[in-house]
Amino acid sequence: MPGMPVPSATLARWQFDLTWSLFEYHLDRLEPEDFRWEPAPLCWTMRTGPDGGWAPDWADTEPDPVPVPTIGWLTWHLGWWWSVTLDHLEGRTPRERTDVHWPGPGEPTVAWLRDLRVQWLAVLDRLTDADLDRPAAFPWQDDPAHTVAHTLGWVNAELMKNVAEIGQLRLLRAAQASG
View 1 (cartoon, helix red, strand yellow):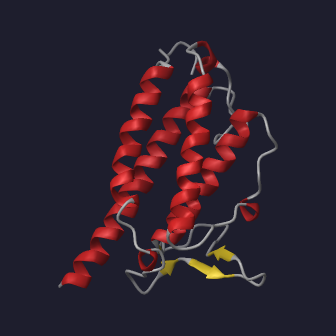
View 2 (cartoon, rainbow, N blue to C red):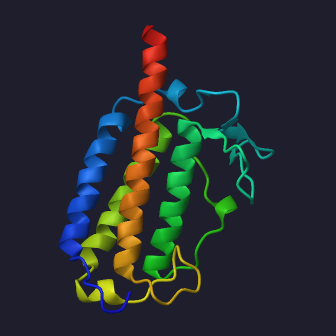
């Protein structure tokens, strides 16, 4: 927003690295069975689609009550918003939600997320503090007050939220299995 101090690219990178280090703790411990474990009767998960690939549960209007997402759904969601954010910052035509495909339970998804991290680091490493003041339309549609700095802050916040959700689900499943 005009007149507000802009955080540095270095600070945004540090915050991302901190969040990612917390994610690695869980990524290293995820088992394929963790991805589709449903912790409650009302869940959003990944289901086999008509083409044999994976399809996320989805509603264009958020349901009430909100379904509890599985780790599989959360990892797809993370991959979706991150892929589209990369498209925007790289100047590519953004993918549609239905064009972002989840690789499946276990190592394929972990590798996909780690690859998105590598792509993200390449973007972060190219940014200068001056770049952070440029307007950014995503994830805010048609709001010229938001900048690339806002997008970086949003990615860090969204990643931290998804990491916490994935970690909590993994810990709950592990605790139930040992109890």
